[in-house]
Length: 116
Length: 115
Image (cartoon, rainbow over all chains, first blue to last red; front, side, top):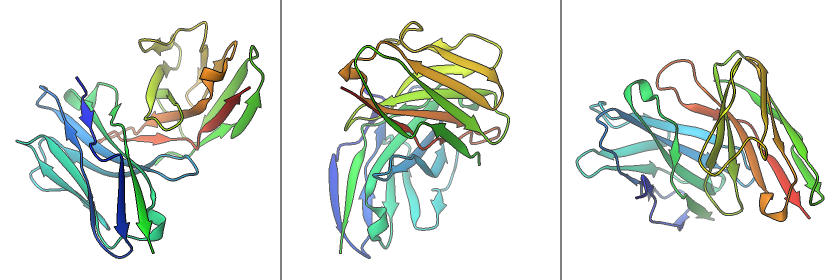
């Protein structure tokens, strides 16, 4: 079974609007971390935001926030006030285990296109 | 955060040849990872390289095809051997942060095209 599911292969959003990228995960380990990465067309992977399984509050980093719904096993990325530079692939990833000792598992990604 | 550089940034290689990719980190790190990203796909872990020990390969990847060196805490190489067009991918080096939440940082990648 897929550990990380991103059901939106592609998304479009108008510039300056907010967009939500979906991520659901599957784990039986009570200790895990969820990470979002951005990959522009240049290819580098840019770390955006992190949410720990025991964190009580949703993570926020500037225009990025994470809508963490633990019971539903979802960790959706919300980008507010989209900019043209946000056009990229976005990957959700999970690491399981105490001190996150396991390796990263990446989802299939969502390609976001921001329209002017 | 760690700054990671990779060489070469891209290459076009002939079938049957080998290419060695270098990864340099600006700080000492225990664990380094090599990933492959085939066109339009997500990242797949090839192997984990710890200094002073043999690399640990993931299912589907073997040392004869992807030999890895890790001579010190800031450097690693990945060789793609006896290349075929199916090896055309982006190869990314990655390191784990030394403290929580232990996020991973990635190099800029090496775009390999095999003809």
